[in-house]
Each structure stands twice: as structure tokens, then as C-alpha cells.
Image 1 (cartoon, rainbow, N blue to C red):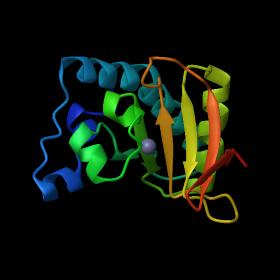
Image 2 (cartoon, helix red, strand yellow; image 1 turned 180 degrees about the horizontal axis):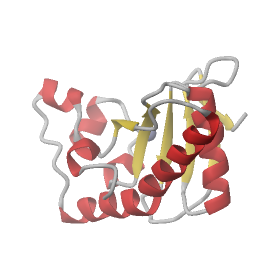
Image 3 (tube, helix red, strand yellow; image 1 turned 90 degrees about the vertical axis):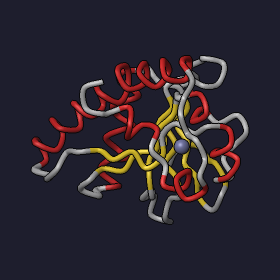
Image 4 (spheres, rainbow, N blue to C red; image 1 turned 60 degrees about the vertical axis):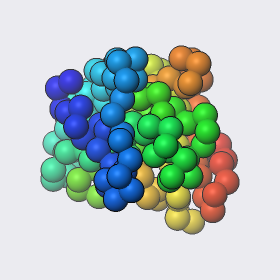
Length: 160
Ligand SMILES: [Zn+2]
């Protein structure tokens, strides 16, 4: 856990508003740590290098949604099998808001490392720019399917 704290991995404004306890159990916490160390930290490090090369400011990455307890996931309308509930998935937004750049970076990074379950370019505009990037390290069964998807208008497509 080099670039991300457990607090930001489990923080949810929605959980606070609704008074939902969003604490992970021991297994979920292990999954969060594994995902950060195997996926998010290396991705953040490579993004820093990428930003330097491209002359982009602020290589920080914000977690817009991380771990979700079952109650929180139901409250936000998440899929019942969501990897977020296992501590295996995180929604990311770069602090510099370079969404198109971040999408292509994440795609290249994940395809070249191969150590991931899913990348979803979420709520894309017509030009393919996402509102956020979902990255999953493993699915609920612990598998890595290496899927690349785009979500537009609530539907999933092979990534554009
Ligand atoms: Zn997500």
C-alpha cells in the first residue's frame, strides 16, 4: 500500500449519508490490500512516468468508488456480483482529469501486464471519453478474465 490508504479504499460519501457501515471484514481487507499492491500501485507508478513523459500535471489518482459492503452496493444500485463487494474493484479518476489519456494509458498498461480481471470505460461520451475507469483485479470467483469493455447509455460493448 504505497500510494493508496485503506481509508480512501473504503470511503464512501453515500455510505456516510445513509449511515451505512462500510467496513470490510478480514477477507475483504486482504483483497483490498492485494488489489492495491498488485494492480493500483504499479498502475499509479506507471501513470506518474506517463504524465512526466507527456508533460501532464498532477499524477495523483482518486478512487471515486472502492470497496462496497453489500448494503452500500444495494443502495447505489451496483450489480449483485460486483467485484467492488469483494474488495477487488476500484473506480478511478485521475486528478488532472485527462480522461481520454487515462483511458488509453490504463488499457495499454493492463494489456501489457495482463494481471487484471476487467477494465470498463464507464459512462462514455459519444467520442469514447469515460466519466471514470473501473478496474477489477479479480472477479467474485477470484478469476482474471482480462476483459476490456466500454459502457455507454447503460450498455456494455467491447472497448472502443
Ligand atoms: Zn466500478
